[in-house]
View 1 (cartoon, rainbow, N blue to C red):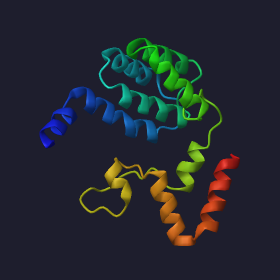
View 2: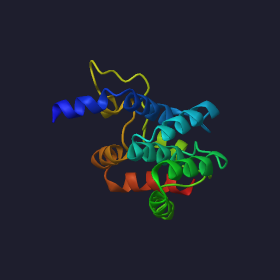
View 3: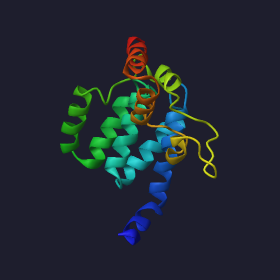
Length: 164
């Protein structure tokens, strides 16, 4: 099993997609055009459809996918991986996981829950973000807030983010 996993994570395509994730999370505003073009190149390779969809979803949820780029990426994804993927995309849109750029709470959520921690040390980790390339998952931050302050404080933080 370890040999199989090693063969997957040492592929250049895996490394490229893995390096894109922290860039998506830490960006402020719309993703640059060359970044979107890099996605198009990776989609054309038809290698890792689940990982690509995860990154497209991340782009959409963080508000970095413009109204112009969204249909292009979706169209190319469906062309590369088949029409059957369109059903998954429609279900994800219905669930709110994929959407065109709208006013989003990502920036507020990122600040309120300290989701991105720049300069995270892997030598002497003091925060969970070291395990995720400087990103602390929201689920972990919610549990931390709950343990620190109780549910009422976390609930008000969530409500503040929801209102934005």
